[in-house]
Amino acid sequence: MVTFITELNNTNYDEFTKDGVVLVDIFAEWCGPCKQIAPIVDDISIEYQDRAKVGKLDADNNSEIVAKLSIRNIPTILIFKDGEIVEKTVGMISKAQLSELLNKHI
View 1 (tube, one colour):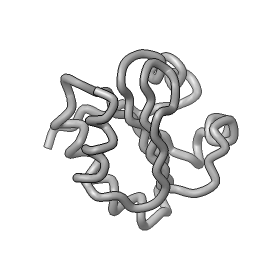
View 2: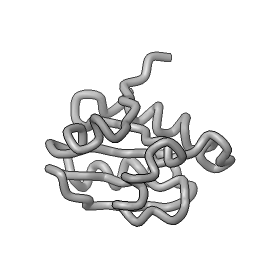
View 3: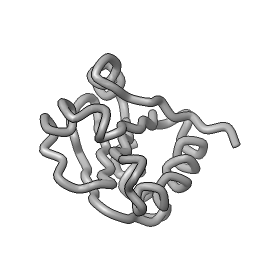
């Protein structure tokens, strides 16, 4: 399956999240719920490829950004609109719920 996901890091995070509607999945490799939500985020990246950007941020490798965002638990999904966080969800979320959150801002 081809996905439309950008791996985020300290170099590209600010630029990636500054324009349009952006979904950021903050995860860690060792996190069980993160592994469960990953296929949902992959599907969203395909379905919304022309309406929203999707990125994944490894919490362990990007602790500076995680601290700046005050992320305490993962998985955390952030939805940005023009550089501002407009939605935040922590823990497992269904594809329908995630689509609903995105659709509010597209």
